Length: 350
Image (cartoon, rainbow, N blue to C red; front, side):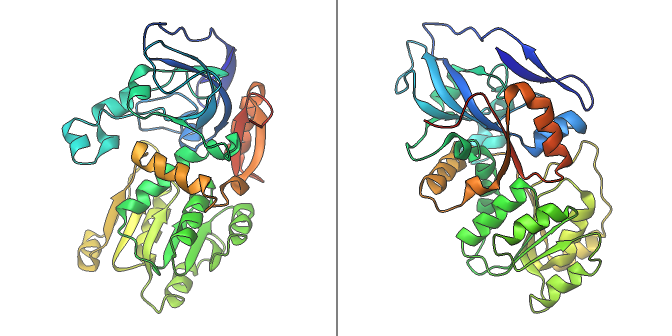
């Protein structure tokens, strides 16, 4: 079978590997991948300096169950499923405080060999802790491949103490940034502003009814314009959906006193910023990082997509067969005319 691996800086390969072996008596599940979205963290693993421990590609997979271990309950071959690659223990000190993505077991757990593979093994650890979820019949595999990134966005919103009518700025108009736009609209935000350096993506954002979309390079006064359009206060919440430290500083400048800055994008390893902390103190800004998601937000994402509360599939612009994964990753990285890029193994459909 085919699987995709990082082979050095800016290089991936599609290799022929063996189908993962599963213990017939155990609780593992073998899944055939049908669709897997490419994430910014995948691109950082290939082109940048990813700061987390896992270097595996593909953590947004949806597919069909091929085989189940004898101790598995509730799943059978043919079931359409979403798979979460990291699953916490739900019993350690972090989990008991609701900090599931900080659980030591969260990073240790994973699917094998990766989500960008024709088939992969979901270990008993994941299966027994909610990491395998049946898809509603109404949900396509394309839509299901967006469950994980949407869940990550939902977790960020859950941490922000959002109030209906709050004004929002989203820095970064990539797929995750536009998911934040969709959530802001669904949750009843007031004015929504978007900034990016990619004009294609800014035009794409405009179709979702944002207040304004600014090119942060050519519109040098965009922070002042955001303040003017929010009564001089600034936005209530700024979501930094990019790893750019420049964007993070800009987020503070456009956020009202006592407002919140959500660090959502993945900063490259070694990223640093210089900021006058007396400004942070006197303005009572809150900097809130949000990393990944647990099954709590994953199930919330499934519900939102199943209820058609978000036009989530409209974010997908490109689909590639797994044999063309290198081209897919390059397309997502260059983003000249791309929003969400999805890798598949067969034609879409139930």
